Image 1 (spheres, one colour):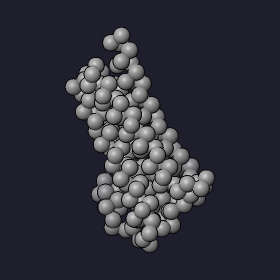
Image 2 (cartoon, helix red, strand yellow):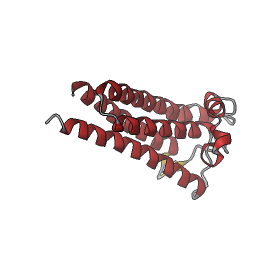
Image 3 (cartoon, rainbow, N blue to C red):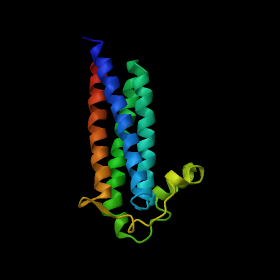
Image 4 (cartoon, rainbow, N blue to C red):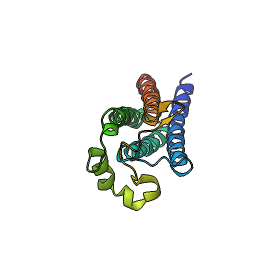
Length: 164
């Protein structure tokens, strides 16, 4: 019975990583097929998805609880930061015409991702322009829902890993 817990935990972590990759892929499809240009807060959420995917993949590969619990906890913290970014984007940034030099813009520029991989991490719209809906739901809320789901799964993984 003890061997099924780590296997399920690893599957949950791989599922989280896959969900993050899928979210990033959907954002890129929306950008390049649907012509929905990203703002700095959109791009920051992309960065958070990538980091969560990396953290979850690393946690899935390592079975040692002493490593897995902190990594799953980091994934939980990153998911909560994604929730905050999506809420800020929708409730605050979308009401402003410029989101240049905001926290999101500074983080993405500071990491150099907008220069290193501009096709994925370059903000090409203002926050007001990026405030669009898909199926009647603001795009930021779709991201918010994904981050909430990721946080719930990460919390479950932390709980399972601590008990294992």
